[in-house]
Structures are given as C-alpha cells and as structure tokens.
Length: 600
Ligand SMILES: Nc1nc2c(c(=O)[nH]1)N[C@H]1C(S)=C(S)[C@@H](COP(=O)(O)OP(=O)(O)OC[C@H]3O[C@@H](n4cnc5c(N)ncnc54)[C@H](O)[C@@H]3O)O[C@H]1N2
Ligand code: MOO
Ligand SMILES: [Mg+2]
Image (cartoon, rainbow, N blue to C red):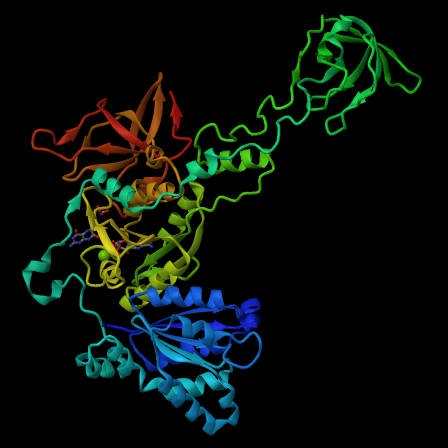
C-alpha cells in the first residue's frame, strides 16, 4: 500500500451552517499532512444528523484506498450529539481499548474528557476514530494515536510484513520521487514503447458509450404530461376586432378594448357589436372570431376619442384568427413529442407549462497538468508557457452548453495529481484533463489513474492530433486524459469528451458526436501515417462546400483553430495514396453552428 488516505469528517450543525467555523477539521488535516508523508486527506462537514453522518461514513468506508476516518464533534452529552451511535452501527469490530487509551490520555489534561463518548472501530478495511469537537481535544487525541496508526492500518490490512516498511515510509518526511511511469529510464528496452494499443476512433467511441451511464432523459421528459392547456383561454391570433361570426360584415359598435393579460369578458355581445382586441388577448365569451384590423375601417370616435364604430370589411368565419383552448398543447398531452435534450428546448418547454423541474447536467472539472504552465495572468518566466488549455476547454464546455464546476492547474507531480483527482471525483462526474499522458518521465496521469483503481479503457488512439488520448473510468466516474498539445486537446475534446458528456446528459447516441457532412478539398493535402483531423474553413461555392486547410497543422499550433469550421476526416497515408487531392470529397466533422466562413 503506497500511501494512506484519510477522511476527516467534521460533525456539527454550526459548522454545517457556517463552514468557516470549522477549525478542528482543518487542524486534523494539517496534522495528518505534517506527520504522514505520502498521504491524501479529504474533508467534509455534516450536521449532527445520524443518517447524514452514516451516509458520508459509508461512502468513505467503501473507498478501497481510504483507510482512516477521523471524526470530530458530536461525541458529548448534548441531545444532538449522535456521532458514537451513528459510528457504532457501521462498525464490524469495535476497538474499546483504543477509545479508552485516548480517554485516559485526555483525562490527564482535563477531567471533562470523561464526558466524551467517542468510539473507535473497524469497518471493512477502514479504521474509524471519534474525536471530540474542540481544537484542543483533536490536537491531543491526534498526538495520542499518531504512533499507533500505521501499525493499526496494516494490521487491519492483515499485512504485518508491511508494518515496518510502512512505518518508515509513513514517518519519513522526505517525499519519495516517483520513477518515470513509463520506466524509460530503467534501461529495459521493453518499456521504450507505450503498452497501450492505438485504437480506432470508432472503437474508442463504442467503448465510451458502453462505459458512460446515460441519464434516462427519455423517461423523465417523454413521460411528462402538460399540467395546463396552451392557450389556457381562447386567444386572439391577430390585432383586430372580436365579434360573432353570425353578425356578418358591416358596421359594428365597439363596446370596449381587450388587451393581452386582461380577464375574458362575459358581457353579452350582439351581432352588430364587437370588441377591439389584441393578439394573445382572451376572446369575450360570446365572440367566436377575430377580424384583423387591416380588414376594417374606423367610422366613428366617441367624445373621449375612443373608437365607437367600425366597418368590418371581411365576412367573419367562426374560429377565424382564434386559438381555441389547448390548441398548441392540451392538458395531459405529452409536453415533449420527441426527445430533444437541448437545454433551449427542455427549459423553454418546461417554462411554457410552468414546470420548475431542473434537469441536472453532468458535473465536469477541467484539469491542466504541466510544471511549465503559468496562468495567462502571470508574468512569463524562463522555461514557462501560458496555460491555454484550461481556458480553451472551459470555453468549449460553455459553447456546447455544459458547465465547468472546477478548474485546477497541477504541476507534474504524482501525489498532487492523485490527491486532486481524488478530491475532484468527490464533487464531479467527469474530469477533463490535459497533458501528461504520453511517454514523458513526468507523464504521471496514467499511473495515477491506475493507482486510483480507474480502468484505463483507452491509452492511445490512432489519430493525429491526439494520439495519447486516454479514457478511464471507475464506477460512474469518468476521466479523459487529453494530450497536452493545445490542438490535440481541442480535437480530442470534440471527438471523445464532448460525446461522452452529451451521452451522460441523456442525448441520443447518434447526436452525441459532431455532425458530419461532405466537403471538397480546396487544395491538395499530403496524408499522414495516422488518420488526421485537419482544421479547415468552409466556403460555399454555388451550393457546394469546399474546405480550405488552416495552415500548419502541427498539434502545438493553436492558430490552426482560427476559422476552423470543420475537422476534415482524412484517411491515413498508404503507399498508393500519399496525397488527398483538390476537389476530392471527404467527410468533415462540424465544429460550430456557424460553419460556413464564406459564400462565393
Ligand atoms: N516519445 C514520444 N513522445 C511523444 C509521443 C510519443 O508517442 N512518443 N506522443 C507525442 C504526441 S502525439 C503528443 S499529442 C504529445 C502529448 O503529450 P502529453 O499528453 O504528455 O502532453 P505534455 O507532454 O504534458 O505536453 C505536450 C505539449 O503541450 C504543451 N502543453 C501542455 N499543457 C498545456 C496547456 N495547458 N496549455 C498550453 N500548452 C500546454 C506542453 O508544454 C508541451 O509542449 O506527446 C508527444 N510526445
Ligand atoms: O497526437 Mo499528437 O497530438 O499528434 O501531437
Ligand atoms: Mg508528455
């Protein structure tokens, strides 16, 4: 076991309401970090609610790599103090001597330690210790058990042989450098090549769609019935005059004016009378048609300057320019005639029937890795570059209607990457990471994934750019390791990450990938040994779509996405076909809604 993961659970109504008041949790996390090198710590705050405490404890107990849980708070005599009761129910084995030891040591400091009811025990392969809530108490309790923890953890893991090794490891303050995950420095030539086969694009996509759990939007949306009629009243379609169609054309007295938003009038209406009415306004109960104002003539104004007599110059027909109740959508009909996950469609249709349902979207985090990265707001320093991937990927998510919940920029460091991913996956479903997935000595991403027990379904794809694209998952958590090269990240986001997120959001599989249409090459283009996704602008010439390649396609040159309307899907070079010729037709993936740059 390379490292011990701790969970620190603050149990307190007050801290739940105001997290800033939680000082004991952070102190414990700090003490763990200071005393145990090579460990990860995650923290959480829950109120003094038994089921919420147990929910969080169960989540952590189930995490294979999480071996120690320290709770602080809720161990006293107060009515809301339920931590021991919540904990005890989850234990496979109680460790009363451990809690007694803690109490005996604490009692030397204060007799009030006798009023703490905290329990210690083992659940699965996790050791759980209840500490009191005060800062002083957690410091004392931590000091009491510090020495015991590594042995206890390995005894639980039933691997006593590791106790000594772990003891040195866990006690040593020196951080252990990780040897190159690709072992290229070990001299054994076997590791001079990637162990991951280069998979075809379609194969990667079918793996993705088989792995990613799709939100069943169909059930949610297609089963929804309209709670109201649209329109809820007989509504005028035009600005004009509401009347009885049996009254024929000719002059009619104007009884009043009905604006949109007015309540329908139930006053009697003779055949030679009418109401002035606006579009969207409710018809008077006795009217059955509307003649638009263009088909009338004003004959008279009353002394207040209001219309009093009009000439209806069109023969009125029953139902003319009237939307009957429920005409657009009647109550109990399905709101969605078909599945369309576009937020514009879903949200506006739900709004139209006053439904407040919020369809949650997949939670996504963006991670950029690379010790060379600087924030675009920093000053450039030697050996560094500005991080453009974080901005690009965040903007791409936004462009496609998804939100980025977290962004983080990590240096090329195994532990830091591991800890960050562990924390992020507590909060999100997808991590879209760039960098550190190829053959480099500090390309830790794949080995971190393995360490976190993620299954790497794809470690390389047979495409250019984007070859080292990595897709991994663990239960319902999904990880995309896009290559660090900005254009590789751009292309692989579109080809793999976006379809996966859309699928998780409930999109139909056929709509998840970018739409593909045929384009004609404007100029010759030499083919690569890998199938290539070339950035190109589209010109519509007499109804035909031509694609003009956007300059040098090297995967580091972000400028190639300028004006990129499509990615031309070019085949790999073969001996008898080294060149894609001008006017040849190729499929192209459409990158944006406005994908025609020029009309000629
Ligand atoms: N020996 C081999 N070397 C490389 C191979 C290979 O097969 N054998 N693959 C090449 C290909 S193809 C690609 S793509 C890159 C991808 O490598 P990584 O995913 O490990 O990316 P990094 O090495 O971290 O960075 C690559 C490149 O991109 C720059 N970068 C990284 N992050 C950002 C960012 N956030 N913003 C802007 N630029 C970024 C980084 O500085 C590097 O220049 O591997 C090839 N190598
Ligand atoms: O796969 Mo890389 O993106 O060609 O450089
Ligand atoms: Mg690299």
